[in-house]
Amino acid sequence: MIYRENGQFKTSYAADQQIFPIAQDRWAVLAIVAFAFVGIPFLVDEYLFRAILIPFLILALAALGVNLLVGYCGQITLGAGAFMAVGAYAAYNFLIRIDGMPMLAAILLGGFVAAVVGIVFGIPSLRVRGLYLAMATLAAQFFWDWAFLRISWFTNNAPSGSVSVSNLELLGWSIDAPIEKYLFCLGLLALFALLAKNMTRSAMGRQWMAIRDMDVAAEVIGIRPMFAKLSAFAVSSFYLGVAGALWGFVHLGSWEPAAFSIDRSFQLLFMVIIGGMGSIMGSFFGAAFIVVLPIFLNQFLPWLGGLVGLHISTAGVSHAEFMIFGALIVFFLIVEPHGIARLWSTGKEKLRLWPFPH
Image 1 (cartoon, rainbow, N blue to C red):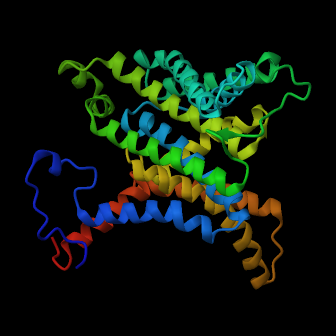
Image 2 (image 1 turned 90 degrees about the vertical axis):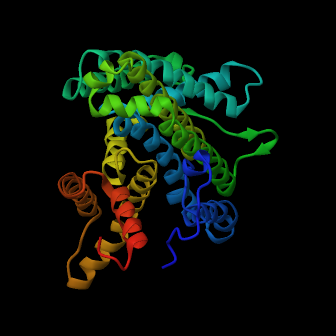
Image 3 (image 1 turned 120 degrees about the horizontal axis):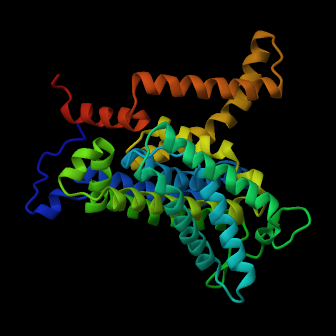
């Protein structure tokens, strides 16, 4: 009964086109964001910041980038990890090679470099689609894995092949403690999520969705496939580049190319499939699911094994994690292709109509 629109009258076109047209949604989102900024820092310990919250925020940003390309524009990618790596290494080189370079500027410039690389590797999308496009983006993954491993300039000629950053600052604010890293990542994620939501509602977003639904018909009505596809690759790669820089600078601190391997690309694609393709909210659901599930399984499976008198090793838990991921992907592809976000939307619609059956 509380999720109704009774008395909520729209008196203008702008009011009817709000991001959250229902007042309950607006207040709920504002409450969640306020709690994330104000409440969580006082309730969560250091372990939860490092193991769950910071990885969730960064991977949610990366999942947003993948969702803009795969979910909204319909262009398959298996090279998301490569664009994260490009953003991380580009930001690192901007930071160490330009005196006085602010950390935030280096991160954003890393995103722009990733956007340029995304456009280059998105050019095959103008001629191929589906599996062939996936192979083209997979080539980007293998190429950049090789480049960052073999070309020592990217790592500033580090003998170990790994790079590290420290003493992160933003306008005099030192970002060292887990709570500071959390707030920094949360601020960037909130900003980029709002930008992504508005982009999908803009003319550019409508072009992406037209290309996704039927590119030939979209071209007939005047949409330029080259601009739509390459802009989707650019925006997606920019998000991934920023997320990669945050992953290296804020979460890891020290990393090597293996941190952005093909496993990362598949992980991000799984987030989009499970969370919901073509949904901003789905990116958050998918990232939360992928981050929390391994931690839950590491605690639950050994407890369950002890309950029934079985010893489940760490390797067994790892194998169970892969099997559960695979089963969930098959389940969502068959039962609900639009993922958890669609189940959430269906639940809200039922609340709006309850107790009526239609």
